[in-house]
Image (cartoon, rainbow over the protein chains, first blue to last red):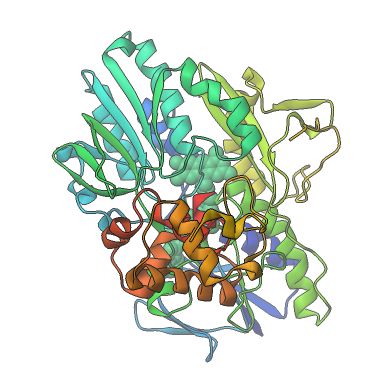
Length: 408
Length: 102
Ligand SMILES: Cc1cc2nc3c(=O)[nH]c(=O)nc-3n(C[C@H](O)[C@H](O)[C@H](O)COP(=O)(O)OP(=O)(O)OC[C@H]3O[C@@H](n4cnc5c(N)ncnc54)[C@H](O)[C@@H]3O)c2cc1C
């Protein structure tokens, strides 16, 4: 029997295992290597600190997320040897493969910035891990006012809009508690604007003003000390509560096996999703070095492409499907509203409707309540349709019809 | 060196060279001059790395990659190219804006 090994069983790895297990037929054994016994619904981490989602809805036991026929190895990969087509696990056992899919995602690296590991005692928080989001929930509940700073240390990060969404929700949260006037909200970003795609910057810039969020741009954090962020060019931003989005890197074994770039992301063919420097290896989701956004929706669109390519690849046929960088995400804007943005490698976010041109129901680039419900409805869709690999009525390729063209 | 040296090469609105093959050392000097940076061998080491890396990888290196591959600390790079070294190095080296700055 031939072996397909999926390295990492998060959003991308689970979708892929479940959609390939029936399609590849009985001559293939599909195995997922994933050490974590619970699957986390990561978009929920944004809502947890504000008490908008309870902990029980955030995770599911891992064994409930795989379809029958998928074999799960609850261990971590320590090393990958692509010349020998094998991986070493942390109990020293070795697994060989005929075909591998790297889907080990990203991890946050507070250890790469001095002072970020000091944690809650030093007023330093994050919401990219379950423990971080829970600790932040208590810190927000006990916050008596002062300056709350959200800082992105370095790009790329997963879900690039999450830090802004956090600020919009924070604005709303403090208003509801009747203490917005006692809180100063600051967004410190290494980018030169809050939204960097030109049309998005123009249409969404008003949100920061409307919600009275101060912006500190091109801020490259060198260290955090004495409740201050210090940048490489010697600017200081003091805080009472810091919500940090630390540097992201790929999994540790990517680095030790020398498979990645300077942040351990794996060089990947933009369209076919094959690993550029390894035979019989594909890369999916946040683990790639692609310029597409690191988001669950992107992992989903990629998985649709990869599903077709892998079937062609194992049948020795040319791969026809090409990923176009398609991303779409709901952006929570606070007050029970959200907006939806849709873009790809070449086309920047445009106004219009999604997924059905002219009809929607979701409006692109405009705030609405139905978009917010769309974001909330995504959680059951995630568990019951996305992960099991059921088809969704959304094309992996971006659809331009019905979108309003804008003069640049 | 005067800015007149590069009025004939095409640049985008943010000052990145549109065609990296039009780059010359003189042009690099002239762009640096315009950005108020006096180039020393330490600067050139980073600029040359950015050019070589772009030639072999097809994309401009970000700040972290430049630091890691040349062994020059980020702090040090900021002293050489204050105010956004990733972008400044790309401009002077005549390569596109690094994607980590997008
Ligand atoms: C706060 C927050 C909000 C978000 N909001 C949204 C949103 O609204 N919309 C959206 O589309 N996306 C959102 N995302 C992003 C989305 O969750 C990720 O992009 C998506 O999960 C990526 O899937 P992945 O499989 O590549 O990585 P992951 O789902 O992170 O999975 C990687 C897996 O690899 C495993 N792994 C790591 N190292 C090893 C090893 N050594 N051996 C074996 N396994 C290993 C990990 O345990 C993990 O399970 C959000 C993320 C966060 C943090």
